[in-house]
Length: 142
Image 1 (cartoon, helix red, strand yellow):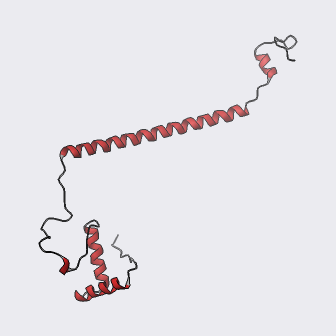
Image 2 (tube, one colour; image 1 turned 60 degrees about the horizontal axis):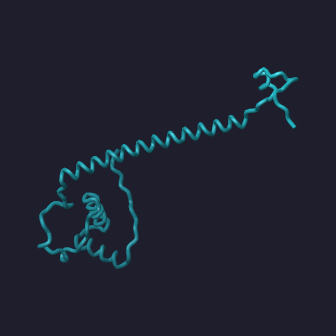
Image 3 (tube, one colour; image 1 turned 120 degrees about the horizontal axis):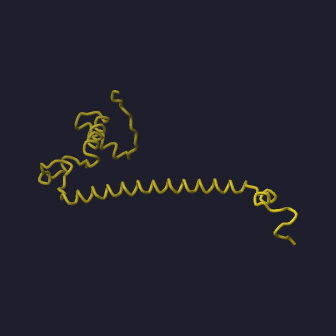
């Protein structure tokens, strides 16, 4: 698949629009190129871009370190982080297993309840199964 261009639209104040046109005119660029360059810089630097006019940048504060800045992290921290990620994955898997077990139990309970609701006990049949003489029952009612 080839690259497709997408049009983005947003609103800015009139003063900001004038300032952006001025920047584009100073650099002899179309306004759309200014936005495109800014968007490309945002993507390259993962959204950590600050736009400042050239005269506002203090040359002494600009160093030759790479952007974005990196931080050195100890190996023990990385190992602990990896261990916690593994434990998190394990706990999520256990949770899913427990959820499926509870769902299974609830379905089984519902099916048993519906079976018991539909079950009819015929006392005469029960008497025949137990070999009880209908003329001489072991129980009396009333």
